[in-house]
Image 1 (tube, rainbow, N blue to C red):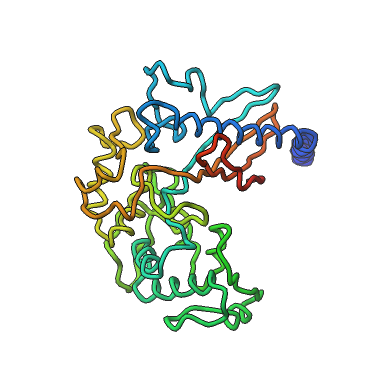
Image 2 (spheres, rainbow, N blue to C red):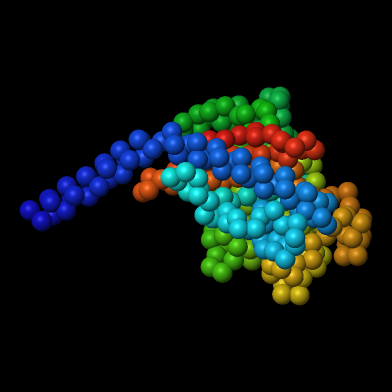
Length: 332
């Protein structure tokens, strides 16, 4: 009887929680949309702060950094993105720029191949995946001679499906591409490192490019929406390595330079690159690969009303005009 009573109480609790979320659904969605508007305001205000309008870095307020709390021009005084009260609810925001990652729709095949080698794939495996991605995103039905995949391959799967034959809209589409394993896509979490980074795939008999121990997966280094250049102030180590031809030494020099004396990104002593003219001090001829600004941002919003919660994600493109453009908004 005690077991039955306990199960019944638990079921009632779950039903009560579902009922609460259902009743609060519209309010939670509007809280989520309010979070997007707040993120827009935060990103636009960043450009107006003296001395910070020409770069975006991890030490700035939008990215979770301290910003410049002592500045009289600081527009964020008293604002905490983790606890924003709106009416009878509360929201928390996390803003991630997409220019820290490589655009999978525009990356040439050699960049894709090197990326998967750095993520842990063998040379032959990375070549096949890169070819399959180019087949997935191009508009024809001709199979890449280096080992890609088109309709004939995907039709033979269980269940069968058709290749996209068009630009990738969401990075999760990579999970459908021939050769993409869950570990290669997600990586593995590693204790004591940045939350979005994961343990590399190790072991096996295939050859590997030297690992950087960040444990990144494809989801950490690629994006489907971004501008053409990588923000050198926000890109993680694997992305820097990929664009530098696999050179981990120069990539770490860039990280060390921007992190400042304490060696930690996102702190008060950071020394972000303020323009690409500073890059030759670390690595010559890199100005055509990198930028110091970001224009596309992914916004994660958690909305809360009492015990009811909902998560939303949106994409915002910051333009030269005051408003910018919300490109996407949906439940996470």
